[in-house]
Image 1: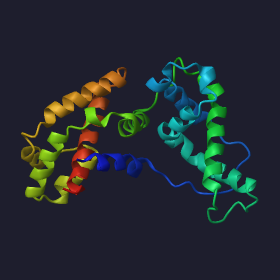
Image 2 (image 1 turned 135 degrees about the horizontal axis):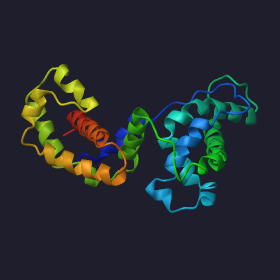
Image 3 (image 1 turned 135 degrees about the vertical axis):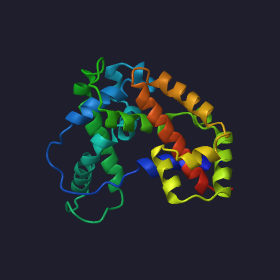
Image 4 (image 1 turned 30 degrees about the vertical axis):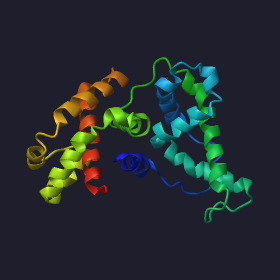
Length: 236
């Protein structure tokens, strides 16, 4: 089974290492507020009132994934606050307990930004194509249903074909961007990839019905290419 590999990929692609630094007195949360307005409309939160989300730890946790771009510069703020609380100098190696304090401080910033973000919940500001792409990718890697989205028969077939026919990096590397070279396409022609793309496209359409079909198709190809590439490196 390939499930252990799929379980590891989100962590590999999405994890970041916060860096401790001096904490400015008031972090800028304007971009975060815009992102939170979108997270609030995710299926798991859409049925909850704005008031309830203001103290929802799961909402803050989801924001750390979906709003990673906006939250990234705030990690230095919360680590600075954590170190202050611990009586440590602003700069220095991470201390035991610092990460837990920083996580709590981050939750406080996220939930503190929600009152302003909630005013945009009914009509969240449009995300640019690149930012929207990353948002959808987070959903695929974090909250999507692997059993529906991964065609294990297709990807194992492709893995076997590509292992039996070693190809240069110029053919394999593009898979990480969702691009299939003519040689790769020929080798996996009867592995069921068209049906897999159609099924994944339908899932993305159901979850993100208002988004550009071409963008959904690009993301489906990216996901399928990623699964194919990483399957080649899996055991078995």
